[in-house]
Image (cartoon, rainbow, N blue to C red; front, top):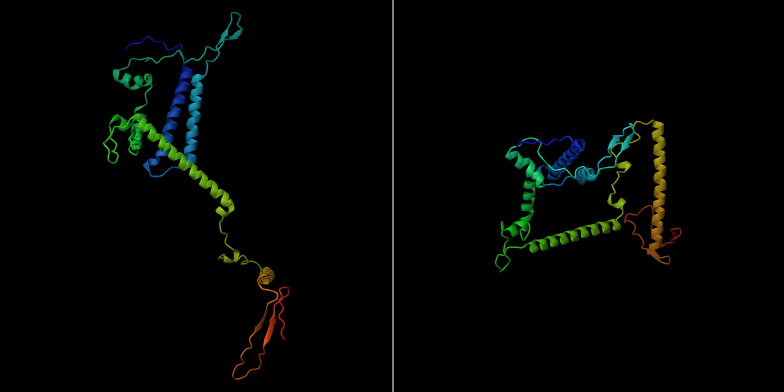
Length: 298
């Protein structure tokens, strides 16, 4: 094949920029595919990683689309007297272009490199992965998806019925039911999370038990001077006394609420030991008063 085509009037700079952007998109697609595939491991990668790579791919695709739709730059020309003149943009420079080989190509190169671009076909890797994905998803459907419609795989017949080849309407109906069930599960999960958030506060859900100082394996007073340790011990003793008195007052208040003010109990007389002792026990009457809790012995 010979060609007398001259590439001089082509916007080579713009085409090189488009090729660079297209290569960036292809690389981002492969990176996102490897991230989701995760080495064929049975787990899902972290969602922020997937989202960041998807956003990068989306940004590159948007830039590529904007560059394709952008009008041509204004042409700068000079008049007879040397005055520069800026012409109007001539529209999109890619609208009037057509793909044409600039060098001689064999039939194999033409079929593998040029024809897929002319027919807007996918690459071989993309087609292979798409077929594998469709086959894997169709195996989980009752109608077997596109494979059942094409007759490649016959779906199992219903109970008591003859096997029937599914139609496109059957596949679409099953896809609608799958989508509806998925939306119901999503709505239920969101509602459960909302109920959990309203029922329990964040501090209670993420609360971590902090170890008390007395439960620690080391004593903070180790290494301090003896005077400081003695002062610290006195302070701790005072704090324990105050805390004990406060606890006693709280217990008294609770007992005062539980005990009736008009209730009087008589304690039975204690039986003295047979051998006699230094003390004698007599019947006693105990009167409980909620205000002072004094015990009057009569």
